[in-house]
Image 1 (cartoon, rainbow, N blue to C red):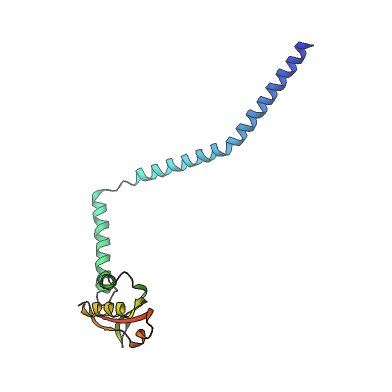
Image 2: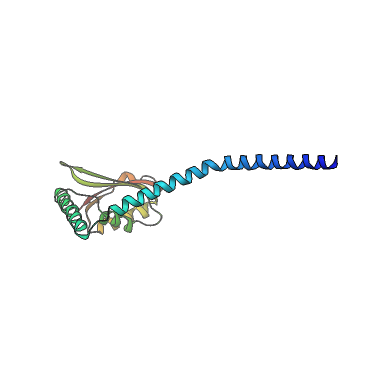
Length: 166
């Protein structure tokens, strides 16, 4: 009877162990399939890249074609005014740390011409006036228009500047 009990207990243990291994294998199968598919895709991409070895002459001809297209674009845009890094740097470098610029707007009307509008806030009239004078002294701009209405408020002034680039 003892031997019977231990043999049943052993069989039950082996059946439970086999069931757990079966469940573990089933839970690992999706990951295995995903990894094998990704491996196949990676190998396929590697093979296509190996087939696309480009010679130095092909690279040079492609670079020449791109360069020709860039020259064509530069000629087409040569007569247009672009808000350049030079203009933005001139504005930002003249700005004091306590002045906050909220918007820089560029307009290019055929009748009015090119103009840059700046909106922002200044802590006081004096700081705003210093910023305006610094921009007037910069040779990047022909004229700087700061309306008198900006000076109505004494502190936390919402200002609007109009700049004409040189």
